Image (cartoon, rainbow, N blue to C red):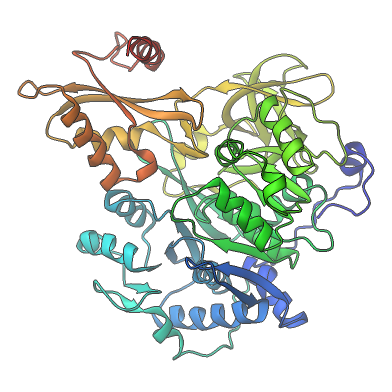
Length: 546
C-alpha cells in the first residue's frame, strides 16, 4: 500500500516499501478480515437485468464463501485443486473466487463468451475438478462433458440442468463456519489464460501475493486510492485480470464497495446512467468503452455523475481521448499498462505527476521496469527496446501452467519481457512503440491468432489460414482471417459468414474474424514461416480497393 499524503511521484518512490507477509490468503484479506471487523460493511452493489440494486455486506459474502468452501471440501477437493468460474459479474462470481482462495484451491476465471472448444481446452489443460456456472454455461459444458476427464461436478447458480447441480440448494446444506487454509504468499491461487502468438493459450499461474502486487498500481491509477466515499465500478468482465485484480479484489482489500452489473450489450448511455444511479466514484474504463462513450452528446448535462478517478488500460490512449475525458469527467484519465503475467507496472497519476502526451506514465513504485536489448542490457533514455520488468516482483506470475518452456522464453536473464517495444524518456516516462509479437488487441481483449487459426482449420472448406489484426477506429484492431480454400470450394460471402460463425460458436464472440479474405496462397518465408507483415500490407490494399 502506498504511504498516505504523497506530494510527488519521487516522494512515492522514496517512501514505498513492499510488505509481503510469509503467510497470506487473498480470500481472508479481501473478505474475511472485513467481516470480522464490521459484518455489515457494504461490499457489493449488484444491479440485476431489471435495474434493481441488491446490496451485499462483507459479512454476507464471507458466509456465502464459507458455505461454498465447505461444499467444495465435501466434494473431496484438496489444496491446489482447480475450480473453474464461468460466470459474468455477479455475487456468485465474487464469492466463488473467495471460496477457492480460502480453501487453498486455484480458481480459473473463464469468459462467458467462450464457446465449447475454448472451454474444453482450458478445463482439460488445467485439470479443473469443479466448474461453477449458470444455465448458459451449463449448456456449453454439456456438449463437452464426456471429454473433461478431471471434472467431478458442475454447479449452476440458476438451478439444476444439463447434468449440473443446483448451487444455492447445495450451499444451504453447509455451514457458514470455515477454517481457511494456512497458505503461503507464494502458494498458487489463480490461473488466468492468456493468448499467445502460436498454439493454444497459456495459463498464467499466480500466487496469493499477486493481489498485494497489484495494490500500488491500482492506488496510483485511481489518484491515491482509497479515499473517503470511494466506490468502484468497471464494465470489464471479472474473468479478465483487469476486472478481477484491477477492480474487485483491490477494492475489497481496502474495504471499498464495488458496483457490479452485466450489460447484455454495453451502451454508453447505460454506462453514464449506472455511474449516476449508483454513486460511482472510481472507474476502470477500457479505451473501447471510452470511445463509445465519447459519441454521446453533452453527457455532463444529461447525467449527474461525480467521478473522482478514471483509469484506463489495455490499449493506448490518444491525446484526443484524454482531452475529451477532461471535458466530460472534469479530471485526467490515468492510463496504466501491464499484462496478465505481470500487471499494473506502469501508470499515470494526475494528482502527483504531470501527464505527458504520447507517454503511458511512469513505473509504479515498487516495480523495476526498464527497456532492454536482446541480451538483457538496459538501454539508455530514448533507445527503443523490449519493455521489461525485473524479477522478483510480487505481481509477477509463478510461470505458465504445464509449460516450463514457455515460462523460460518469457525471460531474458532476470527480466520478464512483455512482448512490447518502447523507450523511456529523460524523465522516466514510458513510451509504447509497438508489439513485437502477433497478439491482436481488440476492444481491450488480447487475442492470440494461434487458437483462431486452429479453429478455422477445422472447417472442411479451409486448406490454410492466417489470422492477423487490422487497424480499427473503435476497437483498436479487429481480427482478420486470410484463407486458402480446398480445391472443391468457391470463395463467396456465404462461405465467409460460415467461417465467421464457425469461430463465433466454438471459441468466443469477440474472437471471430470480422473480415475474411480468400487467397490462392499465403506469403511464406523459404523456411515455411508465415510473413504476417506482408499480410497486413495486403489487407490494407484490399480495404482501400473495397
